[in-house]
Image (cartoon, rainbow, N blue to C red; front, side, top):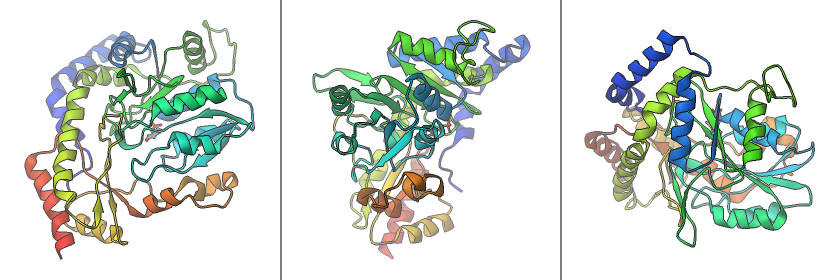
Length: 373
Ligand SMILES: Cc1ncc(COP(=O)(O)O)c(C=O)c1O
């Protein structure tokens, strides 16, 4: 089977450095809060151009800690896209806040300023734009709305780490550093993935950074002093070691993914029943996923066909969040049209850093054959 990601192939190329870093952690027994955690943190701050990175245990925790730091009260509303991974809305509900699930743009699959503005009520306190599949939401527009209505913005950057967002004045910033807080996941298949669970929170705000650092560490400003109720959420040293080795490759990894996407585009744009992923105007696309829309109700047939030819493919995401049992209580019963269409049409195919030209050609040929039959 051609996998969605090729982590084995990627490891082979960085094996020496990874193993050396692992050996150092093992030999020094610095499993928790070892020096490599701080080293990665500083490297990552430099790479992103952000003042503070707070490493934590996973992407879901990073969203939760961000949300906890904002001092929101039960019943406060947080706007999230409904076409996303469950973690985005989950932490909001978990904290007794109300996730207000909105539609997304049918072309970019992302939430937009216009959609957000329609969802704002007097109880709205925050917005969580998700940079889905690897490209940024319209952050300039979103930050303008947030300012107008005094709302916090937490960017869920789990899928777009390394992407660049260009402001109308030409300034460029990394996604995850534009909102009041950014969050990300280092799940192994992410663009910057470790070999277990990991996550990080980003901010340029000194006070929020101090608060989030404290929350992530049992609410402790100093050992055995607990100022707020916190959580235990750490990036362990072995994971930080992987990330330290991989970070210098991240831009090269993005380019490899972009090359695959360009190869797919070239062939698929000429196939009538397919919609290739559209690019946002002000963002680079780091292709965490290459997600097609398959028209005319043929998605399941294409998925089955590719599976029979040994090509993995996945549906991210098959069911709108509001139709999930856990989130029924937050739904007003009205279907959101773009989300419904996307859940019925999207299909993600393999895109990763190790894909050869032969594999790419094999995959495109299978898709062409399916539509030619
Ligand atoms: C958009 C989005 N948000 C949050 C998460 C949660 O990250 P983690 O699995 O590290 O908790 C993910 C990861 O799958 C994600 O894709």
